[in-house]
Image (cartoon, rainbow, N blue to C red; front, side, top):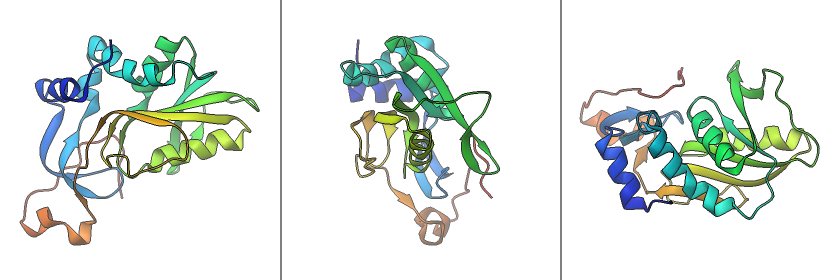
Length: 193
């Protein structure tokens, strides 16, 4: 049931989820491409097919729980957990820091898979990894739908992304798009100050 990269990119294009322009990313960087995964994840059949790439990769690994950073990773984590028949929890921001809330917790030695929608710098995933370790649980891997770094971000655990692309991004001070006066858009879920 897994899809190849070209099939997934076609889904992103057909759902209007691969945007071109000038975007402010969650990382604070600027880019000419934006993956609006929510537009793909609104379709359960696409969510199931794309997340099966992550499931297939980790299918022979012992996993107790799937954890994701809110908001983007929640649907990805839930679908991966559903296919693996495992528990799904998420971390959410409180005062700019990710933490477990809503009574979620992890046990010492619990085997945890971290899932995310899009990775650029990996900041949210690194935060979630630290949460898992703070409970004495064990990270067994990282799965995502899109890796904008084309594998340059290494979490130190087995990792898979359904799509890997080397997407150009700029620090705001060095942004070619800003220099060309292209309007900046912030389409994501997290407010950046």
